[in-house]
Image (cartoon, rainbow, N blue to C red; front, side):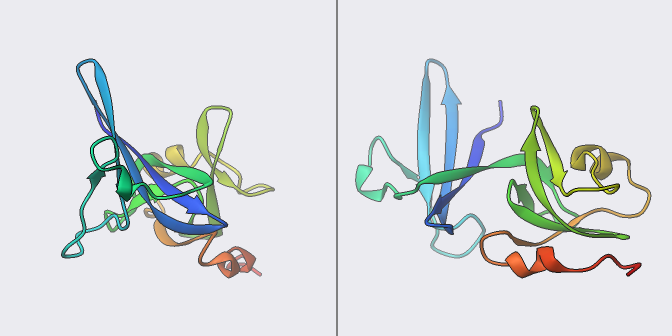
Length: 140
């Protein structure tokens, strides 16, 4: 079983990451300040090292998919999809979706697996780059 991962949010800012790792009969929860290959980063077991708990008031799940560069996609990310304005990854009715209104609204999972126009790319997120959601359609 894959580990569940979340991006931790506090006061509208990304403050860290959380991972739930399942073993027989138990679940371990880990926190990290970064989630990449930066030298010196590490995951802390919160049960064993509670001093490393990262205060947060929200979580955004990793959707289980990667963009064209191999970057993990989280709810709240803004992705660029060829021929479509940048869209926010959302979640509704048990599915990850493009969080838009209008004719471009479709399942991001379906698009990522079946698009002939190219793969999406994470270009930011709603916390750090909200201006990306204000962009106009390429046709406009």
